[in-house]
Image: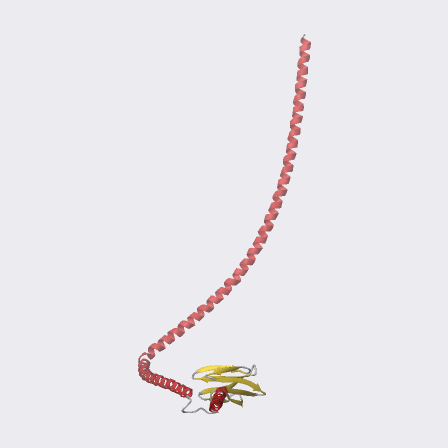
Length: 273
């Protein structure tokens, strides 16, 4: 009997221990884009991509950030987080083997991340204030130096106006006169340039006319030379013909005279015999 009782107590203890081991704590909520909730010291912010209409949960755990899109789930610090959507809402499901606290406002004493972030931000603000204070002091010193410089320049300007006004007026008059003379020179040079351009154009025209005239004269001269050469050649050919005929005629006359003389001589020789 005692043995059966001990076995029953052991079975009950085992069932209790096993039940505690298999216990799951969960929470499901419906949120809008921009809503925030806190799971223990973990911050979860709901966001939506307008271009793709995809809902996501941005999880910040002690400065480490995780992005869980709809249809995804992820375990962060022993807590499983899954995201889904229904119409325009984000459905967040939280589950863990250990109990957890769900809040929609951060715990002042328990939210270490928020405190650390605030401390960091305060430190940055203090540094900015310190930098701005130093910059302010520098600007004050620069303003004082600039004021002194402006005062000195005003004094110098007054002295310059009192002492050098006549010199400045004389310089202005001289520059005005020089400017007027330069304008007159420019006008004269412009007129001269225009005259030279007109003369250049006229000379170019005359040059073209002279070239054309000379070309015409050269062609005419070449034609005359060619005609003269032809006529001269004809004359020389004619004179050559006359000379040849003369030579032939003279040769014939000489031959005739020689023949007559020879014949007369032969007749005289035969008569003497």
